[in-house]
Amino acid sequence: MASAAGNSLLQSVRQIFKYLTSGPGFDKVMKTARVVSAEPGRCKFEMKVEPDHTNRGGTLHGGLTATVIDTVTTAALMTAEGGSPGVSVDLNVTYIRAAKEGETVTFDGRVSKLGKRLAFTTCDVTNESGALIAQGRHTKYVGGS
Image 1 (tube, rainbow, N blue to C red):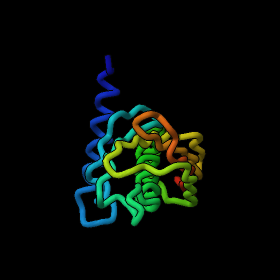
Image 2 (cartoon, one colour; image 1 turned 180 degrees about the vertical axis):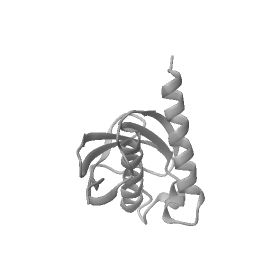
Image 3 (cartoon, rainbow, N blue to C red; image 1 turned 90 degrees about the vertical axis):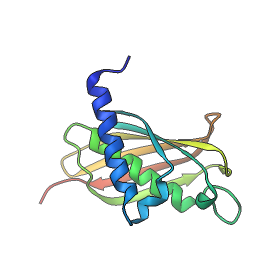
């Protein structure tokens, strides 16, 4: 059974995600994604691969994968104690296998370390059978003068 604090955190992340994807900016490409869980320092999103998400080969576009990794790891960072959205310093994605149109993929973002100035996050992207599709590492500048 989920705690009241856990439900509140999940609702907060859903509101942030709704705000990000409702505007005219690039993040609207993720409007079919949904937040499935949130806990301090960790968030999971699911997304069905739609035609607008694919490359010419009919598989999940690498740029879209990187965009969702950026968003999911930032959401995870915002749920961590003392976390803030920060500014990207480095984003690295390793692509392992393709996800085809119609598949549902899960993005599991986690905070590995939150320091005074830098935050280090990771994200595993898996398909419905749990096979790893991609892994992302995202470093963000979060403080200092």
